[in-house]
Amino acid sequence: MALDSALLEIGLMFTALAGGGVLSRYLKKSVIPFYILLGITLGPYALGRSSFIYVGETEITSVFLEVGAELGVIFLLFFLGLEFSFEKLLSGKKTILKAGFIDLFNLVIGFAVGFLFFGGLLAAALIGGIVYISSSAIITRSLIDLEWIANDEAESILGILVFEDLFIAIYLALITAFLLEGTGNLSNVVYSIVIAVAFILFLLASVHWGSGFFERILDISSNEMLLIRATGVTILVSGLALSFGVSAAVAAFFIGMAFGDTENSNRLEEILEPIRDLFAAVFFFYIGSQTDPSLLPAVAVLISGATLATGISKLFTGYFGGKIYGLNKRRRIRVGLSLTTRGEFSLVIATIAASATGAMANSTITETIPAFTVGYVLVMSILGTLLMQYSSKIETKI
Image (cartoon, rainbow, N blue to C red; front, side, top):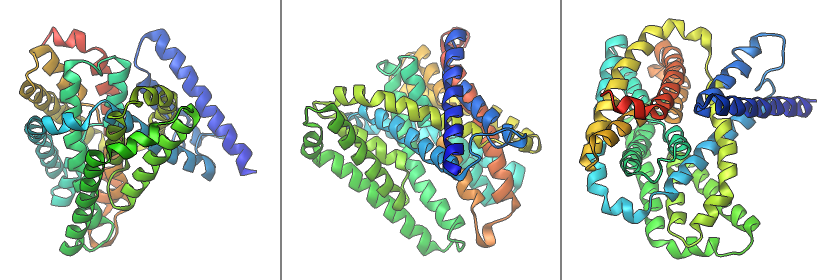
C-alpha cells in the first residue's frame, strides 16, 4: 500500500532531520547545510539509486515534499513580514529603491556570465535571474538563528530582499509568458505582467486599508482558532497569488506585514514559530533532494565561474546598499555576506526553464540551466549560511 510506504519515507526524513539538528548543535554550526545534505543523501539521486527505500519514492511523499517545501517558504516569508511593518516600508521606500537599484547590478553580472557561456539572450536572461535573486527564506532563517533580526543591518537586508521579491514577481511573469505559453507573444507578456502588478497592488492596498479586518481575525482568546485563522488566510492568499502568476512567498510576506501591525502579532509569532521551523526543515531537505550530483560535473565550470563572480558582486552591492542605510563598515559587510545566499526563487526559475515549450525550448534551456541551478543553489545556500555564521571573523579581515 502506498500510504504505509509514504509514512515510512516521511518518518525517515524527520528522524534524519532530527539527527542532523543534534549534530549541528554539537558542532555549533548552522543547521541549514545539514538539512540540505540530508536531502541529497536520502533523496532520489543518491539513496534512490540503491536498493534501499528513499524519501520521495512514492507519489504521495513526492507531493508532500513539494507542498511542505512551499509551506516552508510561505511561513518563513510570513515571519519576515511580521518584522517589517507597512509604515516602515512606506517611510523607507526611497532608501529601499536606491539600495535595490544597486542590487540590480547582480542581474547584469548574471546576464554577462550567461551570455559568455551560452551566447543566447534568453539563456543569459535566465542565468541573470537565477544568480540575481537572494534566498529570502534561508536568509530569514539565518537572521533568526543568529539573533540578528533586531540588529541595524537587518533593516537593510530585509529592505533589499523586499525589492528583490517584488522585482522577481514581475520577472517570473515575464519568463513564464515567454517559456510556458510557447509563443513569446508580446500581448501575452504584457497581460501577465499587468495581472501580476495588479495583484501586488491589491495586496499593498489590503495591508494599508485592511488593518481593521486583520485585527478582527486575531481578536480571539483561543490559541487554536488564532492559529487556524492566521494559517488559513495566509495559505489562501498565497494560493491566490500563484494563480495570478505572483510568487506565494511575496503574498505571504505582505500578509505577515498586515498581521504584524495588529495587537496580537507577538502572540501569533509565538504560536506559529514551531510550525515555521517544521516546514522550513522540509524546505531545506527538498532543496537537497532536487540536486542530482551526477549532473554537476558537466556544469562545474559554469557553477565555479558564477559562484566567484556573483559572490563578489553580491558582497559589493550589499556593502554599498548598507551604506545607503547609514550603516558602519562592519554592518555593511554583514549585509553583503548575508545576500550571497541563493535558494527558492532560483529553483523556481529553473523549474520554469525545465518546463519550457515551443520554439524557445532547447536542451540548454530545459536541461543545462536547471542542472546548473541546483548545483549553484546548493553551493550558494551552504556558502551563504556559513558566511553569515562566521561574519564576525570575516569582518575584522576585510
